[in-house]
Amino acid sequence: MKIAVLGFGTVGAGIHEMLQKAEGLEPGPVWVRRGKADEAWKTDDFDRILADPSIDAVAEAIGGTDPAYGLAKRTLESGRHFVTANKMLVAEYGLELQKIADRSGAAFLFSAACGGGVPLLHNLALARRGDEIVSVKGILNGTTNYMLDRMQTEGLGYEEALKQAQALGYAEADPSADVSGLDALRKIRLASAVAFGILPDGCLHEGIENVSAEDIRFYQSKGLVLRLIAKAARTEEGVSAHVEPVLFARNAAEAAVSLNNNLAVYEGRFCGRIGLSGQGAGRYPTASAVIRDLESILSGARRMLPEKTVRAAADNGSEKYRCYLRLTEAFAGLFPGAERLEQSTADGSLRLLTKPLPADRMHAAAAEIRKKGGCISFAALEE
Ligand SMILES: NC(=O)c1ccc[n+]([C@@H]2O[C@H](COP(=O)([O-])OP(=O)(O)OC[C@H]3O[C@@H](n4cnc5c(N)ncnc54)[C@H](OP(=O)(O)O)[C@@H]3O)[C@@H](O)[C@H]2O)c1
Image (cartoon, rainbow, N blue to C red):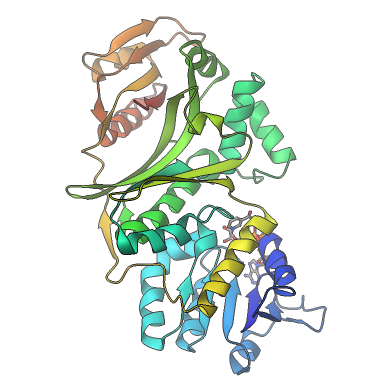
């Protein structure tokens, strides 16, 4: 099977290199920006790829939705297989692309778009066939895990931890998608689509931007370790999907995930809890997931999304958790029955431990407090 690669950045260059040695796969041209085709094996003309009958598949590593969406559509319409590492593309257009693939008989796989080298989507697509997946959750963003790990082991503040993550190339110059939890949310939406056949909309995300060094010291004094967790689970109404900081006991598996590693855990009704951990990003881990998808096509795989996958609003009103809060005292009344833990932290705010409350109420309260000029940092307690 001959493969054209779109994009020659971190991931695209890794795919191109790994294709030289992959069994049953043959490297085709690499598509680059206009005027940048400075080698015989590069091209800036996508029509040339579509006109070449020897090319069977396209692996996309451009990122974003434009021009990736148009190129994906044309690839699948031509009957060629399409494999991508692009979570934005799949979250936005995945269902539409799947329909085109169904019509043309081509494969549409995107294992690398969630978890990099950690084969979460690949396993979910296999596991759901003989089992009913109940929940999927984990540490799906290596940048924020690295930052939280440094804050907890070295006592760094948020800004210092971010600078270190940027210096090591883990965080982008604009780190907002990582630190706000949006990147992890995009990934858990894809995991939900593969596991449950529901691509949830209107999901909630709280990142780590409001976590201070003092918060970390407070949690450590309680024997707790903070991680940024993305979770999707079946509910009576559909699926829940949210991202927030979560506190774990020191002996929990999540607490042991160091540096920029990922941990994904899914639970099946019959198989129980299965954990997968490893590098969630980087050239070779991500390229290896793309190669795995291409090898799966050779063995007959054609799709990761269940048939009849739909988009639906997330149901974040049923699952409840207690939360540790640091907030402007004037807003304490929003959490009736909460236990008062500590007055006057460095910024003159209050610490509370809430009664169990649904994720949508917690996120809505935080949004209301911030809108009214107050401050809040919250972390759910894993119990
Ligand atoms: N990096 C990771 O660890 C990782 C992990 C998992 C998934 N992913 C996903 O993999 C995809 C690629 O990420 P990356 O880190 O490899 O990005 P990258 O290093 O920025 O590479 C992107 C490549 O696409 C090319 N490109 C961008 N826009 C283009 C356009 N309009 N026309 C032609 N070429 C264009 C870039 O060309 P120029 O150099 O000329 O701009 C570059 O070669 C993204 O969807 C990302 O989310 C990455």
